[in-house]
Amino acid sequence: MTDTAVVPRTPLTVLGTGAMGTALARVWLAAGHEVTVWNRTAARAEPIAAEGATVAASAADAVAANRLVIVCLLDDASVGEALDGADLAGRDLVNLTTGTPAEGRARAAWAEERGARFLDAGIMAVPPMIGAPDSGGYVFYSGSPELFEEHRDTLGVPAGTRFVGADTGFAALHDVALLSAMSGMFAGITHAFALIRPEDIAPKDFAPLLADWLTAMAPAVHQTADRLESGDHTRNVVSSLAMQAAGVPTFLRTAEEQHVSPELLAPYLRLMERRVAQGHGEEDGTGMIELLDLRRGA
Ligand code: NDP
Image (cartoon, rainbow, N blue to C red; front, top):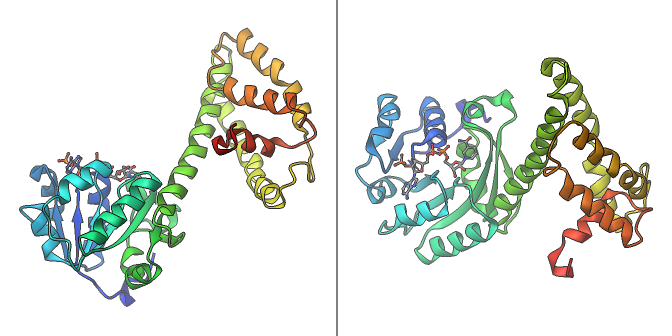
């Protein structure tokens, strides 16, 4: 977070006072920014109005109030719906609504056609992490580097900022890539707890073992990047895919013994076996990324 003492206090608009929009608006207000808000359901803007925000009667009025307009609505469709009819000419639209890369790019073209400048964003935080500098929360931004630089200090008030490129789709892509990896991790955590659940093992005793193991395995992402950059999946392999795949029946039999459905684990294990069957047993698991590439007829 930027030192609020040196931040020029740009007045701004926040469209959407759901859980995230409210958290953002609250921090900007506390830092001394004039904040205008709009929410489809007016009652949901009342708490932030009580903290000093000005409530606009319509999205169009809220957009007219300030050049910098932060959009934090449910999804891309709701952004189109809310801004339909608003005059966007001369506005700087910063879209913190979660969407896909293609939605980010299309929304940028849509905004530019209407005379607005546009940044897309992806929030790597939950509301309690907003305005909490030590929480590790931050926001990905992509689009015009000049526009980002212009608003960098203001955008950095509620959470850290990471600009990831001039391609407007990149913020959403980074956001969803990280969240997708998180989903895989949660799938593994779910399966692991299901395995121990029938036994006399306290989840509270098991949890630190699992957390430490996941932390120890996390640096594998750097080896993956290294192999992808070199294009050589056999580089510095410690546990070959053939060796890993040989363990697959053990994983599946253990699930069966514990009366646990293998549905979360099986797709990854099947991919591993497919890569080995194609003659790539000497590789590390990074070779499986090739199998997921649909452009190559995976
Ligand atoms: P909420 O469900 O709390 O709020 C959703 C907001 O979108 C409300 O302001 C709602 O208005 C508005 N909305 C929904 N549909 C429409 C529509 N058709 N037209 C106009 N407004 C509409 O969600 P959050 O505030 O938590 O999330 C907002 C964005 O932030 C989402 O894209 C989410 O993915 C992202 N985000 C949220 C995180 C979180 O942990 N909460 C984490 C990271 C990102 P109304 O009150 O009238 O329904």
